Image (cartoon, rainbow, N blue to C red):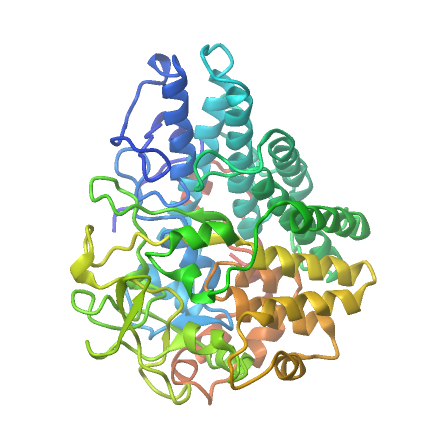
Amino acid sequence: MKKIKISFLAIISFMAFSCQDFIDTEPFSFVSVDNFYKTPSEVELALTGVYNVLSANEVGQGFGNNSTFSRNLMLMLNGATDEVLGRDNSLNPDYVVWGNATFTAQSNFLNEAWIFLYSGIARANYLIERIEPVEGFQGDRKKEIIAEARFLRGFYHMMLSMMHGGIPLVTSTNENPKKPRNSIQEVYKQIIEDYEFAYNNLKNRAAMPSRVNKWTAAGFLAKAHTYLASNKVSKSNSFITINSFDWVDSDLHYSKALSYTEDIIANSGYQLIPNYDYLFRESTKKQQYQETLLSAEASSNSTVKAINLLSYTFTPLGNVNVTGGGYGWFRPTHELYALYNSGDFRRNHNLTGNINNTNNVEIIEGVRYYAPRPIPNTNVAFYCTGKYRTIDPAAKTIPNWASNINLPILRYADILLLHAEALYFKGNEAEARDVLSEIRKRVVLNSSSLEQLNDAYRRDNFLDELLEERSRELCFESWRRIDLARFNRFNQTIENMSTTEGFYNKAIVPTIKSNWMPERVWLPIPIIQIDLNPNLVQNQGY
Protein backbone atom coordinates (compact mmCIF):
# COMPACT_ATOMS: atom_id res chain seq x y z
CA MET A 1 0.00 0.00 0.00
CA LYS A 2 1.32 3.45 -0.91
CA LYS A 3 1.98 5.57 2.17
CA ILE A 4 0.82 9.15 1.75
CA LYS A 5 3.10 11.50 3.65
CA ILE A 6 1.11 14.30 5.27
CA SER A 7 2.36 16.24 8.26
CA PHE A 8 0.09 17.18 11.13
CA LEU A 9 0.15 20.83 10.03
CA ALA A 10 -0.17 20.24 6.29
CA ILE A 11 -3.70 18.95 6.82
CA ILE A 12 -4.96 22.44 7.65
CA SER A 13 -4.96 23.23 3.93
CA PHE A 14 -7.58 20.57 3.24
CA MET A 15 -10.48 22.14 5.19
CA ALA A 16 -13.06 19.62 3.95
CA PHE A 17 -16.23 20.29 5.88
CA SER A 18 -18.06 17.03 5.19
CA CYS A 19 -21.43 16.97 6.88
CA GLN A 20 -23.55 14.39 8.65
CA ASP A 21 -26.50 14.33 11.04
CA PHE A 22 -25.18 17.36 12.93
CA ILE A 23 -26.94 19.64 10.40
CA ASP A 24 -29.24 18.84 7.51
CA THR A 25 -27.31 19.98 4.46
CA GLU A 26 -25.46 18.63 1.46
CA PRO A 27 -21.73 17.87 1.84
CA PHE A 28 -19.60 20.99 1.40
CA SER A 29 -15.95 20.38 0.60
CA PHE A 30 -12.74 22.07 -0.45
CA VAL A 31 -13.76 25.59 0.41
CA SER A 32 -11.17 28.33 0.08
CA VAL A 33 -10.50 29.56 3.61
CA ASP A 34 -10.08 33.14 2.36
CA ASN A 35 -13.62 33.14 0.93
CA PHE A 36 -15.24 31.44 3.87
CA TYR A 37 -16.32 32.53 7.38
CA LYS A 38 -18.41 35.43 6.06
CA THR A 39 -21.83 34.58 7.49
CA PRO A 40 -23.23 32.75 10.55
CA SER A 41 -24.39 29.89 8.33
CA GLU A 42 -20.88 29.42 6.94
CA VAL A 43 -19.45 29.40 10.47
CA GLU A 44 -22.03 26.80 11.53
CA LEU A 45 -20.99 24.68 8.55
CA ALA A 46 -17.34 25.04 9.56
CA LEU A 47 -18.26 23.88 13.07
CA THR A 48 -19.89 20.80 11.54
CA GLY A 49 -16.53 20.11 9.92
CA VAL A 50 -14.90 20.12 13.36
CA TYR A 51 -17.45 17.62 14.67
CA ASN A 52 -17.20 15.51 11.53
CA VAL A 53 -13.74 14.23 12.49
CA LEU A 54 -15.35 12.08 15.23
CA SER A 55 -16.66 9.68 12.59
CA ALA A 56 -15.45 11.04 9.24
CA ASN A 57 -14.98 8.61 6.38
CA GLU A 58 -12.19 10.81 5.00
CA VAL A 59 -10.54 14.19 5.47
CA GLY A 60 -9.30 16.34 2.62
CA GLN A 61 -8.58 15.01 -0.87
CA GLY A 62 -9.89 11.54 0.01
CA PHE A 63 -7.29 10.86 2.70
CA GLY A 64 -8.04 8.09 5.19
CA ASN A 65 -10.83 5.57 5.66
CA ASN A 66 -12.94 5.86 8.82
CA SER A 67 -9.81 6.63 10.75
CA THR A 68 -11.19 7.76 14.11
CA PHE A 69 -14.07 6.31 16.13
CA SER A 70 -15.90 4.87 13.14
CA ARG A 71 -13.14 2.24 12.76
CA ASN A 72 -9.44 2.85 13.46
CA LEU A 73 -9.69 4.05 17.05
CA MET A 74 -12.11 1.24 17.91
CA LEU A 75 -9.40 -1.24 16.97
CA MET A 76 -6.44 0.70 18.35
CA LEU A 77 -8.02 1.36 21.77
CA ASN A 78 -9.85 -1.96 22.30
CA GLY A 79 -7.79 -4.56 20.46
CA ALA A 80 -5.20 -6.85 22.06
CA THR A 81 -6.44 -6.18 25.58
CA ASP A 82 -8.26 -8.48 27.99
CA GLU A 83 -11.52 -7.54 26.20
CA VAL A 84 -11.00 -8.28 22.52
CA LEU A 85 -8.52 -9.97 20.15
CA GLY A 86 -8.07 -10.52 16.45
CA ARG A 87 -9.74 -13.64 15.13
CA ASP A 88 -6.44 -15.01 13.79
CA ASN A 89 -3.04 -13.90 12.54
CA SER A 90 -4.03 -13.93 8.86
CA LEU A 91 -6.32 -10.89 8.83
CA ASN A 92 -5.77 -7.89 6.59
CA PRO A 93 -2.35 -6.50 7.65
CA ASP A 94 -3.82 -3.14 8.67
CA TYR A 95 -6.18 -4.92 11.09
CA VAL A 96 -4.13 -7.83 12.36
CA VAL A 97 -1.54 -5.72 14.20
CA TRP A 98 -4.27 -4.30 16.45
CA GLY A 99 -5.66 -7.76 17.13
CA ASN A 100 -2.37 -9.30 18.27
CA ALA A 101 -0.33 -6.28 19.51
CA THR A 102 2.26 -6.40 16.72
CA PHE A 103 1.68 -2.77 15.72
CA THR A 104 4.72 -0.66 14.86
CA ALA A 105 5.45 2.97 14.04
CA GLN A 106 4.81 2.04 10.39
CA SER A 107 1.23 0.88 11.02
CA ASN A 108 -1.12 2.58 8.57
CA PHE A 109 -4.06 3.06 10.95
CA LEU A 110 -1.73 4.83 13.37
CA ASN A 111 -0.76 7.52 10.86
CA GLU A 112 -4.33 7.93 9.61
CA ALA A 113 -5.68 8.49 13.12
CA TRP A 114 -2.92 11.03 13.81
CA ILE A 115 -3.82 12.98 10.65
CA PHE A 116 -7.56 12.86 11.34
CA LEU A 117 -7.24 14.11 14.92
CA TYR A 118 -4.89 16.91 13.95
CA SER A 119 -7.29 17.76 11.13
CA GLY A 120 -9.99 18.28 13.76
CA ILE A 121 -7.62 20.49 15.77
CA ALA A 122 -6.76 22.53 12.67
CA ARG A 123 -10.43 22.99 11.76
CA ALA A 124 -11.17 24.17 15.30
CA ASN A 125 -8.28 26.65 15.18
CA TYR A 126 -9.38 28.09 11.84
CA LEU A 127 -12.88 28.61 13.18
CA ILE A 128 -11.74 30.20 16.46
CA GLU A 129 -9.40 32.60 14.64
CA ARG A 130 -11.88 33.68 11.98
CA ILE A 131 -15.24 33.90 13.74
CA GLU A 132 -14.76 37.23 15.55
CA PRO A 133 -15.53 39.67 12.67
CA VAL A 134 -18.59 37.70 11.51
CA GLU A 135 -21.85 39.56 12.26
CA GLY A 136 -25.43 38.39 12.59
CA PHE A 137 -25.41 35.71 15.30
CA GLN A 138 -28.42 35.42 17.57
CA GLY A 139 -27.88 35.93 21.30
CA ASP A 140 -24.76 34.18 22.64
CA ARG A 141 -24.39 31.87 19.66
CA LYS A 142 -20.95 33.18 18.66
CA LYS A 143 -19.52 32.44 22.11
CA GLU A 144 -21.19 29.02 22.10
CA ILE A 145 -19.61 28.14 18.75
CA ILE A 146 -16.19 29.09 20.09
CA ALA A 147 -16.88 26.98 23.18
CA GLU A 148 -17.88 23.96 21.07
CA ALA A 149 -14.78 24.35 18.90
CA ARG A 150 -12.54 24.68 21.94
CA PHE A 151 -14.09 21.60 23.54
CA LEU A 152 -13.43 19.56 20.39
CA ARG A 153 -9.89 20.93 20.10
CA GLY A 154 -9.30 19.83 23.70
CA PHE A 155 -10.84 16.43 23.05
CA TYR A 156 -8.73 15.71 19.96
CA HIS A 157 -5.59 16.74 21.83
CA MET A 158 -6.65 14.51 24.74
CA MET A 159 -7.14 11.42 22.59
CA LEU A 160 -3.76 11.95 20.91
CA SER A 161 -2.05 12.40 24.28
CA MET A 162 -3.74 9.39 25.88
CA MET A 163 -2.35 7.29 23.05
CA HIS A 164 1.10 8.82 22.55
CA GLY A 165 1.88 10.87 25.67
CA GLY A 166 3.45 14.23 24.91
CA ILE A 167 2.40 15.57 21.50
CA PRO A 168 2.78 18.82 19.56
CA LEU A 169 0.29 21.25 21.07
CA VAL A 170 -1.40 23.17 18.25
CA THR A 171 -3.52 26.19 19.20
CA SER A 172 -2.90 28.36 16.14
CA THR A 173 -3.01 28.02 12.37
CA ASN A 174 0.48 29.52 12.25
CA GLU A 175 2.38 26.86 14.19
CA ASN A 176 5.91 25.90 13.20
CA PRO A 177 5.63 22.72 11.06
CA LYS A 178 8.81 21.42 12.74
CA LYS A 179 7.42 21.86 16.23
CA PRO A 180 8.64 19.25 18.77
CA ARG A 181 6.41 17.36 21.17
CA ASN A 182 5.13 19.21 24.21
CA SER A 183 5.10 17.49 27.59
CA ILE A 184 1.94 15.90 28.97
CA GLN A 185 1.91 18.68 31.56
CA GLU A 186 1.82 21.38 28.86
CA VAL A 187 -0.76 19.52 26.78
CA TYR A 188 -3.16 18.96 29.67
CA LYS A 189 -2.92 22.54 30.82
CA GLN A 190 -4.39 23.54 27.45
CA ILE A 191 -6.90 20.68 27.37
CA ILE A 192 -8.31 21.65 30.75
CA GLU A 193 -8.45 25.33 29.76
CA ASP A 194 -10.42 24.42 26.62
CA TYR A 195 -12.81 22.20 28.57
CA GLU A 196 -13.32 24.83 31.27
CA PHE A 197 -14.14 27.46 28.65
CA ALA A 198 -16.77 25.11 27.20
CA TYR A 199 -18.15 24.27 30.65
CA ASN A 200 -18.56 27.97 31.48
CA ASN A 201 -20.06 29.03 28.15
CA LEU A 202 -22.32 26.22 26.95
CA LYS A 203 -25.96 25.58 27.86
CA ASN A 204 -27.37 22.52 29.60
CA ARG A 205 -28.40 21.16 26.21
CA ALA A 206 -27.46 22.11 22.67
CA ALA A 207 -30.07 22.88 20.01
CA MET A 208 -29.25 19.49 18.44
CA PRO A 209 -28.89 16.47 20.74
CA SER A 210 -25.79 15.34 18.86
CA ARG A 211 -23.85 18.46 19.88
CA VAL A 212 -21.80 18.98 23.04
CA ASN A 213 -23.12 20.95 25.99
CA LYS A 214 -22.08 22.15 29.44
CA TRP A 215 -22.28 18.64 30.86
CA THR A 216 -20.23 17.07 28.08
CA ALA A 217 -17.48 19.51 29.03
CA ALA A 218 -17.93 18.70 32.72
CA GLY A 219 -17.71 14.98 31.93
CA PHE A 220 -14.45 15.36 30.09
CA LEU A 221 -13.06 17.58 32.80
CA ALA A 222 -13.74 14.64 35.12
CA LYS A 223 -12.08 12.35 32.57
CA ALA A 224 -9.00 14.56 32.34
CA HIS A 225 -8.59 14.99 36.10
CA THR A 226 -9.05 11.28 36.89
CA TYR A 227 -6.66 10.38 34.07
CA LEU A 228 -3.90 12.55 35.48
CA ALA A 229 -4.55 11.55 39.10
CA SER A 230 -4.69 7.80 38.43
CA ASN A 231 -1.46 7.85 36.44
CA LYS A 232 0.26 9.53 39.39
CA VAL A 233 -1.10 7.30 42.17
CA SER A 234 -0.41 4.12 40.19
CA LYS A 235 3.11 5.25 39.25
CA SER A 236 2.46 4.74 35.55
CA ASN A 237 5.47 4.25 33.34
CA SER A 238 6.57 7.33 31.40
CA PHE A 239 9.82 6.02 29.85
CA ILE A 240 10.65 9.43 28.36
CA THR A 241 10.63 12.73 30.27
CA ILE A 242 7.84 14.46 28.35
CA ASN A 243 5.51 11.57 29.23
CA SER A 244 6.06 11.93 32.97
CA PHE A 245 3.27 12.36 35.53
CA ASP A 246 5.60 13.28 38.40
CA TRP A 247 4.27 16.84 38.36
CA VAL A 248 0.67 15.76 39.07
CA ASP A 249 -1.00 16.55 42.40
CA SER A 250 -3.28 13.52 42.51
CA ASP A 251 -5.29 14.68 45.52
CA LEU A 252 -6.05 18.01 43.84
CA HIS A 253 -7.07 16.37 40.57
CA TYR A 254 -9.32 13.84 42.30
CA SER A 255 -10.94 16.69 44.25
CA LYS A 256 -11.67 18.52 41.00
CA ALA A 257 -12.97 15.35 39.35
CA LEU A 258 -15.30 14.76 42.28
CA SER A 259 -16.71 18.28 42.05
CA TYR A 260 -17.53 17.81 38.37
CA THR A 261 -19.12 14.37 38.77
CA GLU A 262 -21.20 15.65 41.69
CA ASP A 263 -22.36 18.55 39.54
CA ILE A 264 -23.34 16.25 36.67
CA ILE A 265 -25.19 13.82 38.93
CA ALA A 266 -27.09 16.60 40.71
CA ASN A 267 -27.86 18.95 37.85
CA SER A 268 -27.34 17.56 34.36
CA GLY A 269 -30.52 15.53 33.87
CA TYR A 270 -28.59 12.66 32.31
CA GLN A 271 -29.52 9.20 33.56
CA LEU A 272 -29.03 5.48 33.20
CA ILE A 273 -31.71 4.49 30.71
CA PRO A 274 -33.72 1.39 31.68
CA ASN A 275 -32.67 -0.78 28.72
CA TYR A 276 -28.92 -1.31 28.53
CA ASP A 277 -29.12 -2.79 25.03
CA TYR A 278 -30.87 0.31 23.65
CA LEU A 279 -27.56 2.13 24.00
CA PHE A 280 -26.07 0.04 21.20
CA ARG A 281 -28.75 -0.27 18.53
CA GLU A 282 -29.22 1.64 15.30
CA SER A 283 -32.86 2.55 15.90
CA THR A 284 -32.91 3.72 19.54
CA LYS A 285 -31.06 7.03 19.31
CA LYS A 286 -33.77 8.90 21.22
CA GLN A 287 -33.05 6.84 24.32
CA GLN A 288 -29.29 7.04 23.78
CA TYR A 289 -29.35 10.83 24.02
CA GLN A 290 -30.72 10.50 27.57
CA GLU A 291 -27.50 8.77 28.72
CA THR A 292 -24.82 9.59 26.16
CA LEU A 293 -22.93 12.86 26.63
CA LEU A 294 -20.83 12.42 23.48
CA SER A 295 -21.00 9.95 20.61
CA ALA A 296 -19.54 9.43 17.15
CA GLU A 297 -22.63 10.15 15.07
CA ALA A 298 -23.50 8.39 11.84
CA SER A 299 -26.20 9.01 9.24
CA SER A 300 -28.82 6.91 7.48
CA ASN A 301 -28.69 9.33 4.53
CA SER A 302 -26.75 7.58 1.78
CA THR A 303 -25.57 10.91 0.31
CA VAL A 304 -23.81 11.82 3.55
CA LYS A 305 -20.43 10.18 4.00
CA ALA A 306 -20.75 9.42 7.70
CA ILE A 307 -21.08 5.75 8.58
CA ASN A 308 -19.48 3.41 11.09
CA LEU A 309 -17.70 0.24 10.00
CA LEU A 310 -18.98 -2.12 12.67
CA SER A 311 -19.20 -5.07 10.30
CA TYR A 312 -15.40 -5.41 10.51
CA THR A 313 -15.21 -5.01 14.26
CA PHE A 314 -17.76 -5.49 17.03
CA THR A 315 -20.98 -7.00 15.69
CA PRO A 316 -21.85 -10.71 15.85
CA LEU A 317 -20.65 -12.87 12.96
CA GLY A 318 -23.40 -13.26 10.37
CA ASN A 319 -24.40 -12.69 6.78
CA VAL A 320 -24.11 -8.93 6.23
CA ASN A 321 -26.74 -8.95 3.48
CA VAL A 322 -29.27 -11.25 5.15
CA THR A 323 -29.09 -10.96 8.95
CA GLY A 324 -27.15 -7.76 9.53
CA GLY A 325 -24.20 -9.55 11.06
CA GLY A 326 -20.54 -8.81 10.54
CA TYR A 327 -17.35 -10.47 9.36
CA GLY A 328 -16.16 -11.50 12.81
CA TRP A 329 -12.60 -10.22 12.44
CA PHE A 330 -12.37 -9.34 16.16
CA ARG A 331 -13.51 -11.63 18.95
CA PRO A 332 -13.87 -11.32 22.73
CA THR A 333 -11.54 -12.86 25.29
CA HIS A 334 -12.15 -15.56 27.81
CA GLU A 335 -11.25 -13.03 30.52
CA LEU A 336 -14.16 -10.75 29.68
CA TYR A 337 -16.70 -13.57 29.83
CA ALA A 338 -15.27 -14.68 33.19
CA LEU A 339 -15.93 -11.21 34.65
CA TYR A 340 -19.70 -11.64 34.36
CA ASN A 341 -22.09 -13.45 36.64
CA SER A 342 -24.86 -15.38 34.89
CA GLY A 343 -27.41 -13.08 36.56
CA ASP A 344 -26.04 -10.05 34.70
CA PHE A 345 -27.95 -9.05 31.54
CA ARG A 346 -24.78 -7.52 30.09
CA ARG A 347 -23.02 -10.87 29.67
CA ASN A 348 -25.41 -12.37 27.14
CA HIS A 349 -25.86 -9.04 25.36
CA ASN A 350 -22.20 -8.12 25.01
CA LEU A 351 -20.90 -11.66 24.42
CA THR A 352 -22.85 -13.84 22.04
CA GLY A 353 -22.73 -16.49 19.40
CA ASN A 354 -23.13 -15.78 15.71
CA ILE A 355 -26.34 -14.91 13.86
CA ASN A 356 -26.85 -18.20 12.07
CA ASN A 357 -30.47 -18.08 10.89
CA THR A 358 -33.37 -15.77 10.08
CA ASN A 359 -35.81 -17.27 12.56
CA ASN A 360 -34.49 -15.65 15.73
CA VAL A 361 -35.99 -12.18 15.45
CA GLU A 362 -36.23 -9.29 17.91
CA ILE A 363 -38.68 -6.43 17.41
CA ILE A 364 -37.37 -3.35 19.18
CA GLU A 365 -39.91 -0.50 19.16
CA GLY A 366 -41.30 -1.78 15.87
CA VAL A 367 -37.89 -2.29 14.24
CA ARG A 368 -36.74 -5.74 13.19
CA TYR A 369 -33.37 -7.14 14.31
CA TYR A 370 -31.93 -10.61 13.89
CA ALA A 371 -30.64 -11.89 17.21
CA PRO A 372 -27.46 -13.92 17.73
CA ARG A 373 -27.56 -17.31 19.37
CA PRO A 374 -26.27 -17.74 22.94
CA ILE A 375 -22.90 -19.31 23.65
CA PRO A 376 -22.36 -22.31 25.94
CA ASN A 377 -18.80 -21.26 26.83
CA THR A 378 -15.80 -19.39 25.40
CA ASN A 379 -14.25 -22.45 23.75
CA VAL A 380 -16.43 -22.34 20.64
CA ALA A 381 -15.45 -20.76 17.33
CA PHE A 382 -18.74 -18.84 17.07
CA TYR A 383 -17.93 -16.81 20.24
CA CYS A 384 -18.57 -13.19 19.17
CA THR A 385 -18.72 -9.60 20.31
CA GLY A 386 -22.44 -8.89 20.42
CA LYS A 387 -22.72 -5.43 21.94
CA TYR A 388 -23.58 -3.44 18.81
CA ARG A 389 -26.67 -4.49 16.85
CA THR A 390 -27.75 -3.47 13.35
CA ILE A 391 -31.23 -3.61 11.88
CA ASP A 392 -32.61 -6.03 9.31
CA PRO A 393 -30.63 -5.26 6.12
CA ALA A 394 -33.89 -5.16 4.16
CA ALA A 395 -34.72 -1.88 5.93
CA LYS A 396 -31.35 -0.17 5.36
CA THR A 397 -30.90 3.00 3.30
CA ILE A 398 -27.10 2.72 3.29
CA PRO A 399 -24.88 -0.19 2.19
CA ASN A 400 -25.39 -3.34 4.22
CA TRP A 401 -21.74 -3.36 5.37
CA ALA A 402 -22.20 0.11 6.85
CA SER A 403 -23.93 1.17 10.07
CA ASN A 404 -25.65 4.41 11.08
CA ILE A 405 -25.36 3.57 14.77
CA ASN A 406 -24.18 6.30 17.16
CA LEU A 407 -21.08 4.96 18.86
CA PRO A 408 -20.91 6.12 22.50
CA ILE A 409 -17.77 7.94 23.59
CA LEU A 410 -18.91 9.18 27.02
CA ARG A 411 -21.97 7.87 28.84
CA TYR A 412 -23.55 8.73 32.17
CA ALA A 413 -22.58 5.25 33.36
CA ASP A 414 -18.94 6.26 32.87
CA ILE A 415 -19.58 9.45 34.85
CA LEU A 416 -20.80 7.29 37.73
CA LEU A 417 -17.73 5.08 37.47
CA LEU A 418 -15.46 8.14 37.50
CA HIS A 419 -17.45 9.41 40.48
CA ALA A 420 -16.86 6.13 42.31
CA GLU A 421 -13.15 6.36 41.52
CA ALA A 422 -12.88 9.90 42.86
CA LEU A 423 -14.88 9.03 45.98
CA TYR A 424 -12.55 6.13 46.72
CA PHE A 425 -9.41 8.20 46.38
CA LYS A 426 -10.95 10.92 48.54
CA GLY A 427 -11.46 8.38 51.31
CA ASN A 428 -15.10 7.36 50.86
CA GLU A 429 -14.96 3.70 49.84
CA ALA A 430 -18.42 2.81 51.17
CA GLU A 431 -20.15 5.42 48.99
CA ALA A 432 -17.97 4.42 46.05
CA ARG A 433 -19.25 0.85 46.34
CA ASP A 434 -22.83 2.15 46.48
CA VAL A 435 -22.25 3.84 43.12
CA LEU A 436 -21.13 0.55 41.57
CA SER A 437 -24.29 -1.03 42.95
CA GLU A 438 -26.38 1.68 41.29
CA ILE A 439 -24.83 0.86 37.91
CA ARG A 440 -25.56 -2.85 38.33
CA LYS A 441 -29.17 -2.29 39.33
CA ARG A 442 -30.51 -2.02 35.78
CA VAL A 443 -28.83 -5.22 34.53
CA VAL A 444 -29.95 -7.70 37.20
CA LEU A 445 -31.89 -10.57 35.64
CA ASN A 446 -34.98 -11.97 37.33
CA SER A 447 -33.05 -15.13 38.17
CA SER A 448 -30.74 -13.13 40.42
CA SER A 449 -30.80 -10.17 42.80
CA LEU A 450 -28.77 -7.01 43.20
CA GLU A 451 -27.34 -8.34 46.44
CA GLN A 452 -26.20 -11.54 44.72
CA LEU A 453 -24.59 -9.55 41.93
CA ASN A 454 -22.82 -7.25 44.38
CA ASP A 455 -21.56 -10.24 46.35
CA ALA A 456 -20.32 -11.99 43.21
CA TYR A 457 -18.48 -8.90 42.03
CA ARG A 458 -17.03 -7.72 45.33
CA ARG A 459 -13.25 -7.57 45.57
CA ASP A 460 -11.29 -6.76 48.70
CA ASN A 461 -9.22 -4.33 46.64
CA PHE A 462 -11.67 -1.69 45.44
CA LEU A 463 -9.51 -0.78 42.45
CA ASP A 464 -9.72 -4.39 41.21
CA GLU A 465 -13.50 -4.21 41.48
CA LEU A 466 -13.65 -0.80 39.79
CA LEU A 467 -11.57 -1.88 36.80
CA GLU A 468 -13.63 -5.04 36.42
CA GLU A 469 -16.86 -3.04 36.56
CA ARG A 470 -15.52 -0.58 33.98
CA SER A 471 -14.88 -3.51 31.66
CA ARG A 472 -18.26 -5.14 32.26
CA GLU A 473 -20.10 -1.88 31.59
CA LEU A 474 -17.89 -0.15 28.98
CA CYS A 475 -16.36 -3.04 27.02
CA PHE A 476 -15.72 -2.25 23.34
CA GLU A 477 -16.29 1.49 23.95
CA SER A 478 -12.63 2.42 23.40
CA TRP A 479 -11.52 2.98 27.00
CA ARG A 480 -9.90 -0.33 27.97
CA ARG A 481 -6.38 0.34 26.68
CA ILE A 482 -6.42 3.73 28.41
CA ASP A 483 -7.77 2.28 31.67
CA LEU A 484 -5.11 -0.43 31.82
CA ALA A 485 -2.38 2.11 31.08
CA ARG A 486 -3.49 4.79 33.55
CA PHE A 487 -3.73 2.28 36.41
CA ASN A 488 -0.43 0.64 35.44
CA ARG A 489 -2.16 -2.72 34.95
CA PHE A 490 -1.19 -3.51 31.36
CA ASN A 491 1.81 -5.74 32.10
CA GLN A 492 -0.05 -7.70 34.76
CA THR A 493 -3.10 -8.07 32.53
CA ILE A 494 -1.18 -9.42 29.54
CA GLU A 495 0.80 -11.79 31.77
CA ASN A 496 -2.39 -13.21 33.32
CA MET A 497 -4.33 -13.78 30.09
CA SER A 498 -5.09 -17.43 29.48
CA THR A 499 -3.60 -19.44 26.63
CA THR A 500 -5.62 -22.55 27.51
CA GLU A 501 -9.17 -21.23 27.92
CA GLY A 502 -11.14 -19.46 25.21
CA PHE A 503 -11.10 -20.37 21.53
CA TYR A 504 -9.49 -17.09 20.47
CA ASN A 505 -7.26 -16.81 23.51
CA LYS A 506 -5.59 -20.04 22.46
CA ALA A 507 -5.01 -18.71 18.95
CA ILE A 508 -3.90 -15.13 19.67
CA VAL A 509 -2.73 -14.60 23.25
CA PRO A 510 0.61 -16.40 22.68
CA THR A 511 1.37 -13.85 19.94
CA ILE A 512 0.42 -10.96 22.21
CA LYS A 513 2.59 -12.26 25.03
CA SER A 514 5.58 -12.86 22.78
CA ASN A 515 5.40 -9.32 21.38
CA TRP A 516 4.47 -7.44 24.53
CA MET A 517 6.91 -5.00 26.10
CA PRO A 518 6.11 -2.59 28.95
CA GLU A 519 6.85 0.38 26.66
CA ARG A 520 3.85 -0.56 24.50
CA VAL A 521 1.51 1.15 26.95
CA TRP A 522 2.30 4.15 24.72
CA LEU A 523 1.59 3.95 21.01
CA PRO A 524 4.45 5.04 18.76
CA ILE A 525 4.64 8.32 16.92
CA PRO A 526 3.91 7.43 13.26
CA ILE A 527 7.21 7.05 11.42
CA ILE A 528 5.86 9.11 8.51
CA GLN A 529 5.42 12.06 10.87
CA ILE A 530 9.00 11.68 12.16
CA ASP A 531 10.24 11.58 8.56
CA LEU A 532 8.49 14.89 7.97
CA ASN A 533 9.47 16.42 11.31
CA PRO A 534 12.70 15.05 12.83
CA ASN A 535 11.99 17.05 16.01
CA LEU A 536 9.33 14.49 16.95
CA VAL A 537 11.19 12.24 19.39
CA GLN A 538 9.96 8.63 19.20
CA ASN A 539 8.52 6.84 22.22
CA GLN A 540 10.77 4.28 23.86
CA GLY A 541 10.69 0.78 22.41
CA TYR A 542 9.91 1.73 18.82
